[in-house]
Length: 411
Image 1 (tube, rainbow, N blue to C red):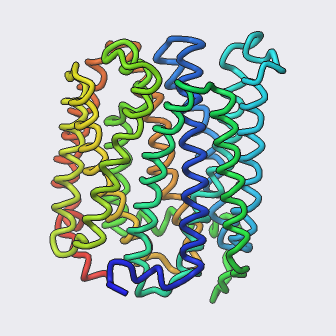
Image 2 (cartoon, rainbow, N blue to C red; image 1 turned 45 degrees about the vertical axis):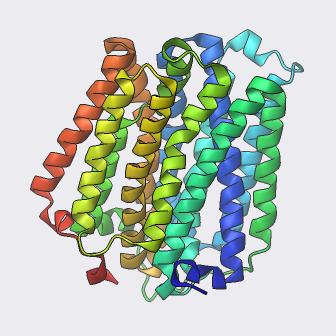
């Protein structure tokens, strides 16, 4: 088997990818449907931003504890329980939209925000635990390849999920959309069950509870390369994300309806898939730091170009480019974290990574909603893209270790 596919020698890695793929596919469908549903209920950019805030708050609160739990207990069981909890949240959204409940009629978007709060809790557990369990499935020498394909799987699901949701919404309806999401997450549960029990990684020492809880944060702050990469992504995503505003771009600017919205939502991940394939064959090595900084800067440029585009196909292309550039950062960060993190700390470090990156997507959605409310839709996205470029310049100046990053030096 050729080197780019070496991780697939492990059968359980395939189950891992299938579990992650179906979970993310179902979740991305759900997020897309929720965004469209809230837009239909409120037609307010701030309401769309509040979706991100509703998920970010529980995620940030639960992630440090979830990371600690992932290092203390069986990681497979944690993923199973969190997936079941996510399934129950999706079931509630289906019930709200089925006509048997009057929750949306009586309370507007408030019940949806409550369910998204639940999914934030579930994601607080699944994010760190999926990261932490990977080295228990593949040997260390296959981690870079496995991390690249894990990222590819994420982005394939992120392409298909919004596109499927948009098409099903447009041609069949919201109930079938939520039913499809629930079915996919159920499949994820089955694939996780096919992975053998991994047990708990043994520690060579013990720590008091609160010191153990903060170990992931201490590790990140002490590792200048990791901290630089996470900080760069945090602020770039915080200011540069226009995804939360895509329902309004689809209807008011580009006038393409729910089907077009699904394609717009999928375009960044399509670009990320292409980039992930390139990185699998030609991994970032000697000039990884410079490549990373350039890619994030180009992501900011893409956001500015998207804001001023009035053509649907040009907007699709720009969003695909933004996803390709963004995925360079994703893959580099994943590999650095996997190779530098001790086995018995993976859950806690992944939790910190999730707080820096995962929650920044949701908080970035809130920031985008507030900025659009205050500045207007197009100026707010231009502002975000400019801020992203400025942050790259500051990172390049104040984080020389990241700028000079050589991936071969940490293998």
